[in-house]
Image (cartoon, rainbow, N blue to C red; front, side, top):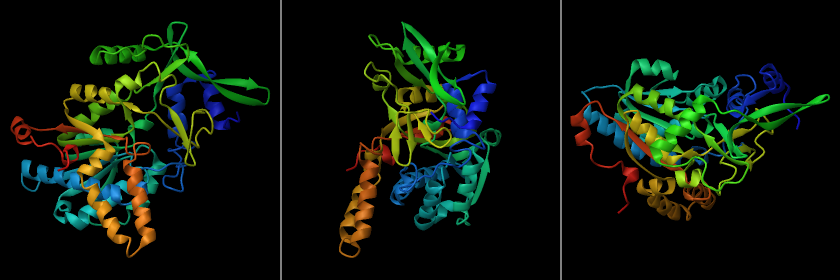
Length: 398
């Protein structure tokens, strides 16, 4: 494999091998060469991969209904004229937050009076893309902060993590000769060239503690009985500290997580021999996760029950979860299809484009199998008692 010169130098300086966690962090987030850090990836139908917001405005328009519900609830619960925050973690190229704000301005303009937007983005190249796109917004103050800065401030409002946790670096573990190993990435010298290969490293105490916490907290064995040599999976060791930090920054409000997820019975299963990790480049998924370092996205599904476990340990109330298709139907997707039927008579190409985008949002083979998880923080017991109604996206449509 033709490895990038910069990566060869980094791994060589580390002694010839690094953990897969370190490799994934480098190739995604290095500020000069990383896929996100340097802004190499392009999001959208003509880019490396699509996200729900990049397919058009329908996704954000439907999501804005839930966001407006929550903001109105906070206006009722909190003191008069209280500032509210709308936070997005890892905002991509800015499509979601831009379309949300435009929709709120159009349909719920009163909510913008005391609203500020905060974007938490670690990669400067992505920040630049976001700032360029969001320069269109002038009725709401938008600022970019570090997570640690926001924790010191404490806010009331809504935080959104849309397709961001799946790109957190993961530890990979593999089962071989009745022993668990940490997966690493190693340089092999081939004369004038180097090759990257996967290798086995000893488990760290951090990995052992994580495995123990999942197994004891969820009553599951990370390595199921009867697996064959080479069985491999991922551990999202950064999710718990991230949830703890987010819990610490929200005084009163909600966290909405939308991402690839699997139930724990499917995640750590005998049949899932190679885990969930995939690379994406030019709209194509690949299992060759060491190819095109710094030029390809790497993503791994989350374990659904572990999110609930970590949330409850972090003073969040776990409100519930649902698949994206069901969430969007609850928010009024059927009415959107009806409006497309009427559009056919006037603009057939646009009608087909909107219909295709909506179908991709709910197709379980595409984006419809995403999970929406709602977590809640309240500042008082009395407030918690008043919020008995489920969020709209979790309700069964009538």
